[in-house]
Length: 332
Image 1 (cartoon, rainbow, N blue to C red):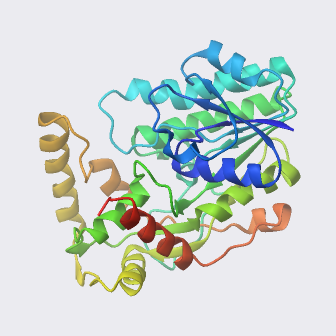
Image 2 (image 1 turned 45 degrees about the vertical axis):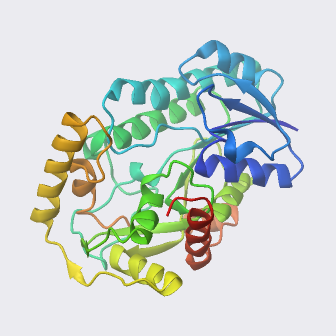
């Protein structure tokens, strides 16, 4: 089976590509000319140079493919030119799904994000878990990344209603090795290793092992229902619990000082203004990230468990692999 994978040079995409290779799939990878190739150097796969913002390159990459795993996305919590993010995440997804329809691709698995889910505003660790049915709208999306992923997900649902066989998966917060950029998730691990966590804020994430998440993509191909979405999640953990687990793995100290929201927000304002606008570099703290942190992003993967055979596994192994990979590759 010839399978096109987008985003294979990235973190989660590289895990998906490797999982497919282990299943014996014939791989074709859509790769931007400027992408870092480290994550695919040892993969036996055909490479097609292209870009989600170039419909012609998408048409070329899809020729003869039976399946598509669309993992690529512009995943940043701060961007100088938001329009480029929408072109990649929204219009790129639209172009790919339209090309898949024209070329008769059997099935598309689209990687969305848990960011598109509806989370309560209580900020309590014991609050209700979000799932695929939680009420949500575009107005609930904080920041350009969340907005673009929500809009792209709606494009996927529209395509499904128009007859394209597309299954949507919503990974939570993947963690593991080969996070080359790194992603905002990887930065939590990396900042901890660099002792840049003197304090923490009261927030929560669902962490999922990137290797398991890649297997969930294949389960979605095999068992998912077209036009449906599935949360691929792991453990619901507060930021403090994540840092405590990293402390246990590394022997480094976990912070004990909790930073009030008002100070975290002020830090985001200053960092975004000085680092982002004046120095024109990506800030470590952003206003949108702090605003998102007010909500506990805790979810249930029960639907994926029922319909896909998904299983939740502890993330300690993935956190350990992440730490070891960053250390072995000179990030620390």
